[in-house]
Image 1 (cartoon, rainbow, N blue to C red):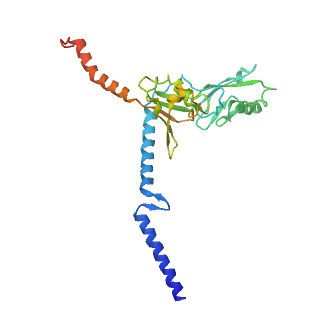
Image 2 (cartoon, helix red, strand yellow):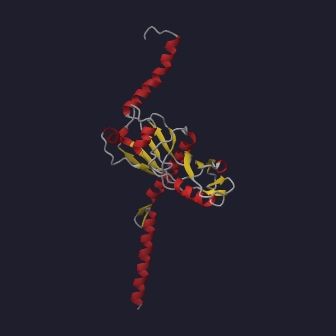
Image 3 (cartoon, rainbow, N blue to C red):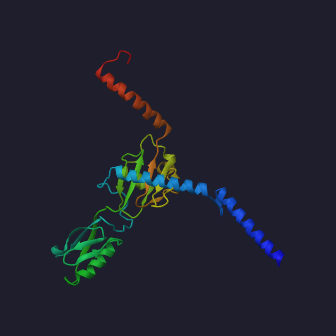
Length: 260
């Protein structure tokens, strides 16, 4: 019994020693704590960059990108137009408010957030039957304001673009933003999936999608995703020379220089 107790005490000592060693070395249960902390720091820096991007980008509210054939889930700030046949008092344009409702004539608040336009139509039909016999109505989305993708870098029109569907393909997003510039490094395009806690990044070969028709990496973008098209080495050199020569050219236009 004494020997068993001594072995048990020794095993506890060894376990504690091993635990202290793993903690002191920064590794425990298969995780490198230093790498975990580094990843958390990178995620925080990436989230801060995303917040700055969202604040400073131009918003192209008139350029809604994507396909009409893709389902769209209504969200806050979207605008719908409701037309009830022969019932103008029940017809109009309505914006979805902060609580996800529209304020509908006579009926009151109607939940719209999280529904598609057909589901909203069904909900309105049920409520209208209290006022109108066999109402005939249509629901159209006329303001897409709840879902955006961010197009950065070497695209024709960098900015924030409203989406016409719940998803949009990378190719369609690039086309909607005016395609890429001649300085684009299309083989190193970066997609940032802007999750609130852990933003994920992925490199995509856009060249194969645009110029070779290979759709394998034509991924779907969702609300708040960011597309970054970097500048090629040649483009950086060209822009560098441009920055150097611009002041000289401006001076030359004012004072003729004999050696130019």
